[in-house]
Length: 388
Ligand SMILES: [Zn+2]
Image (spheres, rainbow, N blue to C red):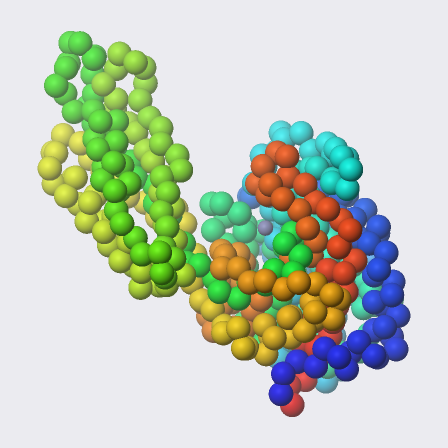
């Protein structure tokens, strides 16, 4: 038995809730209110407090903010059984001082973090709200959670803590992202990130010529890494995204570092790539005694997947089709990595259209936001029905 989307569509209270959600304006207003509160990774507290207050006013139970800043709330089910977790991340890639003013251009609304993930968070809040308003009945509890630490060096620390805490009570997970309406993620890419540092004695560029240079050493290593070959199937990638170091143009560098991002849909292919990089670092270190190389893992996101035929994926497909969305699939690295890597069924879904995520000219197109919420509601109702 799969998830029954159609049964819920014809339930009178659900039908009324779906009619309400056709007006996306209130959801958009919430998204904008959230977007105006800075929430860089490791600085989400103010936005978390806003979300907690909204969930409290809606009337949810078990409202709590944990030690690292995750916001928990629960809507009790009628029967119990493994609960549904619906989560959205609080953090953005934009530092505190970012200009968060919005700009309207035609159908587009531009604003840093508006799509990723203020719109996802607004979806979380309004899903809870519409369920309360229309007294929607579900069998299992639903946990509504806004979590920290999804972006960059947050390394999914928020959702890791959430899953640790709720592991024994939940059976399914739906992760919300603001953009990519119609896109479902059920295959989590594994990611490993390295910081590689080089240290050397350095000196004056003329007077000490010939002394070991941290920069010369690091760029030689970087060149070797850049020449590695990786499989295209299973898709495996790497990128040196940051490289920096040195003191001045006439100083032999004492310090340099780079940040390397490695990804694969296959745990084995990722392990192979990591082993090759480790090998290059080891031989570079062996070849030059005057330079020390130090590798630190600064990101580690495990891979995991459920098949496309899984009832949760098929339920999400049916929910999207019920609102007329074209459905597509994407492999990605999201909060869903953590439940998927632990064998807990999870999908990540987008709520409306948009683009330029992680850029200052990020935008959303809110026209489909109502349909995104409608699909989410149908999925949440079906996924919180007791398994027969
Ligand atoms: Zn996001």
